[in-house]
Length: 156
Image 1 (cartoon, rainbow, N blue to C red):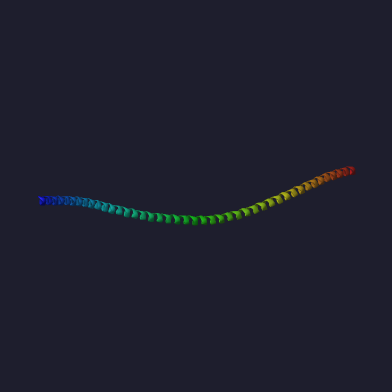
Image 2: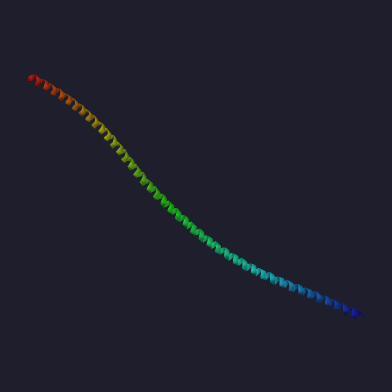
């Protein structure tokens, strides 16, 4: 009977150990499944990260190229602006020189106009003086003619 109990106890122990082993195997299988899912998820996440990194690199290159083009355009525009400023300054100097020349010409014309006005006034004065002389001469002529008639009348 003692042996039976020992045997039964051993069998119970063996069953419990077998049950524990089965539980452990099941837990290991579940953990293996979880590990497999995590590795699969990790691989998927790594692929997503690589894809995002590639997109970031591509975007970065595109932005760098766009920035480089914009910087070149800015430099070209600055150069063009500098050239325009130089051209504008040269044109402004030409216009100033032309304006100065026209101012000198205008001053010369004004001086000529004053001289002509002065000459005209002198001519008017001379004409007035000549008219006065002509008037005096006519008056003198008329007086001499009257004297001549008077003398002729006396002679006759």
